[in-house]
Length: 135
Image 1 (cartoon, rainbow, N blue to C red):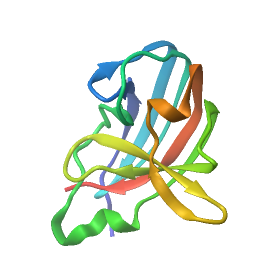
Image 2: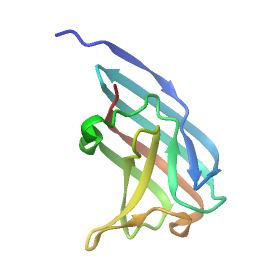
Image 3: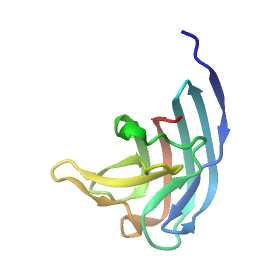
Image 4: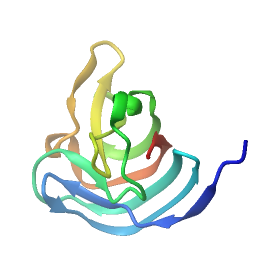
């Protein structure tokens, strides 16, 4: 079976709530094979401003929400300057091109969204990578 394949770059934008963050270096790459998008991004030298939940916007393709397909999507997040109480997990937010971040504790599991209260004045998303389903 032949699958169409596309690849390229995208520019991730980082937000706290509705405030776009100032980022020194933001790069992203992706490969789309059929209806699966594999992506990797980094955002370094982020200056904290605003309040609210941490997100990365501008994914290269809109997710497919039919049948709750993206509950199987997986991500890895490497970061600094974020006190999450454990690890940070990225999730595709509905049918938007947004990754929302959540805090996970080794003892308590999910402890809430990653917000400005968890973030230092300067922080980094050294690597966010994974896959999700699109149409």
